[in-house]
Image 1 (cartoon, rainbow, N blue to C red):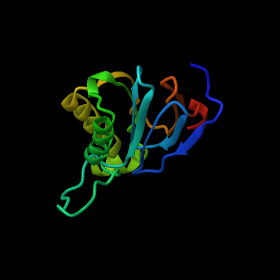
Image 2 (cartoon, rainbow, N blue to C red):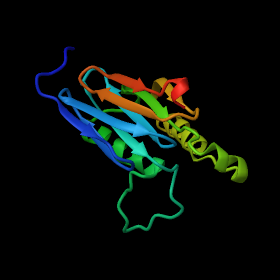
Image 3 (cartoon, one colour):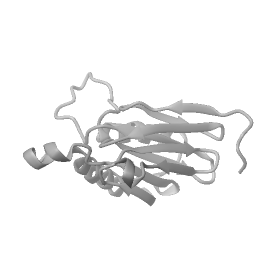
Length: 164
């Protein structure tokens, strides 16, 4: 499908999620965070989340879902699937992010948020039955992501090795 005449362009900040259709383009920039891009090839709908951490320790029963956490970002996406009367198996998923942006700190403390985010993303995909068709995860570089919902294309830009 060709680019639409009118494009609604959304920039996701950490903790945000957006769902759209054939006139929507979603962008984000990732480091240790993870972006999940879901696309329904027949209905030409989909969305992206940008989460910072795998999960939060405790969520009070009166607290709303928070897209900063992978588990809750997935719940927000699942609500969109329910609204569209679709199932996870109907979607193509592309996953990005989870870089080790602070390798010196990780050496000292053994904490790698990016790695934990990747593990959570894989766990969520398996748990819900999504079809992952591509991923670019890990490493030490940031990523710029652009997702065109009208055709399911996701464009990835990373710095050249000499820029790191």
